[in-house]
Image 1 (cartoon, rainbow, N blue to C red):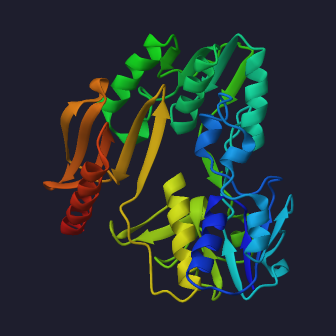
Image 2: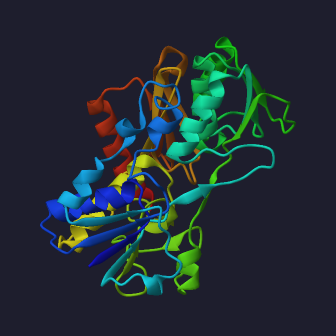
Length: 351
């Protein structure tokens, strides 16, 4: 049997990958969440705005799991790996939001529904944080007619992306839409709603109690295996070896969880595969979507082609003349695919 601790996207994709590759072992998923595995991106966008309902966010209908020989145990937690009676254990335990006194957090489907309900009777809101969650919640609440003050400790939104032209274009959009954007600020004004989107903490306690190596996350190789035979980790909680950039990384985005789950599922079914993609994520605010490929660590130069304000731009990060990362807006799939290959080749040349 395969026992999966955690019931998010990575777990659902593992089942998909395993069954599609011919895996026949029964699977049990333990999930603390009362809902079946769901996609998180809609929570801060379409679901929050009332343009989608909970069923729309599900990866699969609940009956799909029974049809694929999966015992889906919702609302159940695992206290110790010793309680998981399975020949193969997968830790897909995800992460939890950092908390801030006086502010609600945003991570789960129920958080989105609760905030959507509160927004119906609210005139003002404060959103703390300038990353994906903070920016997307700000945009969605504004579109619902709430006057939002966004408090960002850093000098720009998406500061961790290190792409000032992108950040500055978003500043203009947010202010044009009436957002009171306070950069480099820590003081939080009063409002009807206060929400914190200040990052997450990986759920690694089970791994630590079992004696597994934990750094920024649960340490695994490029086949998602820990040093303990039969135990793997994927998704937000995993610090995995990325051969493209020749280093260990932990990534908290939808595409990473999906790829981890699918690939490990195929590996457990006998496929000779491993992590081998250029990492990517996307975000959308006020109908403007951007994508981000690769890893900017160690870049020594940047080059901008186009204009983010015109929703047509490619911002490249270079190291030693090689492209290792890019932020893009308004590009077609062919251009994005070519850019990923440029990054793969660039990362290999400076490794």
